[in-house]
Every structure is written in C-alpha cells, then in structure tokens.
Image (cartoon, rainbow, N blue to C red; front, side):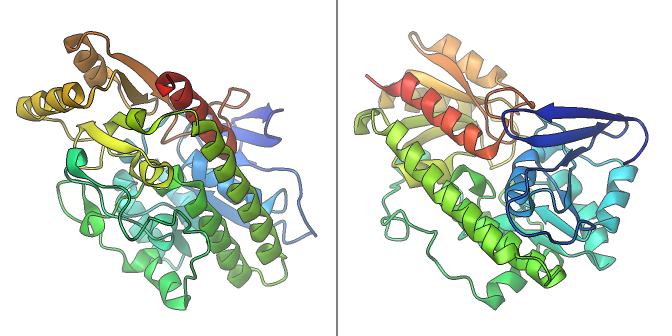
Amino acid sequence: MMLGTILIFSKRSGIRWAASILPLALVLGACGNGSSASEDLTIVATTSIAGDLVAQVVGDDATVEVLMPIGTDPHDFQPSSQQAASLRDADLVVAWGLGLEEGMDDVLDNAASDGVRIIELSALVDPMPYVEDHGEEDHDDGVHEDGDHGDEDHDDGDHEDGDHEDEDHGDEDGHEHGGLDAHTWMDPVRMATAVREIGAALGEIDPSGDWADRSERAADELTDLHAEVESILAVVPHERRKLVTNHDSFGYFASRYDFDVVGVAIPGGSTLGSPSSAQLASLIDAIRDAGVDVLFAETSSPAALLDSIADEIEGVRVVGLLEGSLAAPGEPGDTYAEMMVLNAETIAEALAP
C-alpha cells in the first residue's frame, strides 16, 4: 500500500477502506465468500457504489480501489494524475459509463487505449432513456411492465458494446449515448445483472477463480434486496408515489417501484447544468398541480435549488437521500444494500399517509 494512507474499518459492512491523503482513493476488501482466487488482482471502480458491488463478488481475494471520495458528485469528479496512473495499472476498471463520469472521459479513453480492460455497467443492464417531460411520462410502458429485468440474457455482443473503447461520450446537453440514463444503480434488479457482468469480466481475466459462482450469489442477494425495498415502499399509496429530485437520477427507481417523477431541479441528466427561470417556474407549477409536498435532495449534489423551491410553496419540505455515493464508513447507508434500504425507508416515511 502506498505511503501516506489512512485506514478506516467499517464494522457494519466488514469493508476495509484505505484513503490516501493526496490524492484521495479508497481501497475496499471484504470477507471472503468462496474459494481462494488470485490475490494479485487490482480492480479500480469509479464510485463507492460500483466499488461495493465489486467487493460483493471478489471478497478479500482482490484489491478494489475506489477513485471518488465519499460524497463526491460523479458528474463533477476529475481524477488526479496519480489516480489516472492507477487506472493504467489496473487489471480491470469498473465504471458506469453513458456519460456519468463526464470529468473522467479522457482518462478512461487513454486507459482503454493502453489496453486496460474497462467495463461500463450501465450499458450492460438494459439502460432506458431519460424522461424529457416527467409530468406526462407513463412508467408502466410495455418494456418495463413486468418489473423483472434480472432474468434477461445479455449475449457476447452486449459485452462488446459495453467496452469503453466503443463508447461515444455524447452531446452537450447532458443526454449522452442517445439520451440513455446512466443512473442504473437505483434499480437493484439491474444490479443483479451488473454483478454477473463483473463476474464474467473477472472470469476472462482470471479463469482460475470461481467468479461466476460468487457473482451469482451476489445477484441472489440483490434480488432479495429488491424484494425488501418493494416491501418497505408498500405503505406508500399510489396517489402519493410522486418524486421531485435535484437532478434526473431516480428514473430507474421510479420505473421499478411504480413512482412518477414529477420533475427535477436541474434538467439534462447531469448536475453540471443550471435551469432557466422559466424551467424553475414550470417545475413549481408542476409541483403545485401534482400536490407534491416533499422534495428529495440527493446528498452528493447541492440542495440549494430545491430549498429555494420549497420556500416558494407553502407546506413543502426537502428530505435528503443517498444517490451518487455511499455514506461514510460506519454511517447508515455505507453499503449499496444499506443505501437502498435507507432511501426506501426515508421515502416511505416521507410519503406514507
């Protein structure tokens, strides 16, 4: 391990975090969950959520380095030169893609050009388009009506399409890749597919490991997580299942759990844009028309816009949710499963009658 490192241990998750002081990087290891594999594998994940999913598969038989510090907005992060070097030295890089890590595009492209294996999870788990007009969107469309994406097969062509070398980083309005939404981790069923993809990539890199079995166990746990979240949200009546958030990051959650996204404060799928006064006025009208009295602010991006909107409408309050980052080690929500359960409990408490 490099010099100048702070070690933190989370008793709740069993995950060991090591944060180098400059630049900040997080290294995860978890309790072993299968037969021994190569302990020399180094996997770099862009976000703490991706790192936790990888750790569910590899246990303590690989080193998992997380580039973005806890609480970082993934859209706004730019890696240091030392972190860029760690990407080039990795056996595998796990990113979300679809334009999410927009400050890392050049670094990821350079690593891919150097021959580093990079998988971008969101492209591999049935991504759906951003919703342009939330007020008129019907989440019960034909594609998602059965609510079960975890059983879908992704053939070898899908794997190739997810490789970073083939990605197009998109346009200027924040809707990269033809407007596909990168925030796929908000759906645990899709994450069951994601851990299988991680296992498949590890199997190609290190055929000696039991990665397929490990990833299948992780996928089963994520399927159970989906059922738990669904049960927690059961107390929210249909007419109360309305979300207003900082930016367009809860589309998958809404589709999976039958919510309507009434609107977002920052349009375009990224946190780096800014709404016009007309857009804010339209959102305020939509909130009033829908009878929304709770706005949800993601903790990894500023809540100032939602706070100002709440000030404009009597009886409206702002509640915080985890979204782009896990909580700090030892805090509620410091694993992916705990984050999803905590968010479900928070939403249920806020919206239940």
